[in-house]
Image (tube, rainbow, N blue to C red; front, side, top):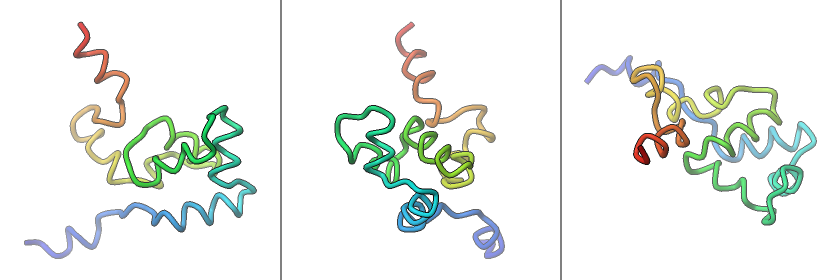
Length: 97
């Protein structure tokens, strides 16, 4: 196993770092969820631990970043395969045809 391959791979931000960055930007998960019209104030918590492109975009936009900057592991396969699970809507529509 090539040790340098593991050390050079970008890692996802820790969920506490994301929450802290939101606080520094004047947001909380609750406030951001409500701002985007979600009935549950904790809806966006799901994006911290699970792939959810819409939630990831909302959080990243609040921080002035791209989702791939915060969650590189979730987006790394997109460039290698020409689109991955982060394009959930397209995948859903492919099966409906």
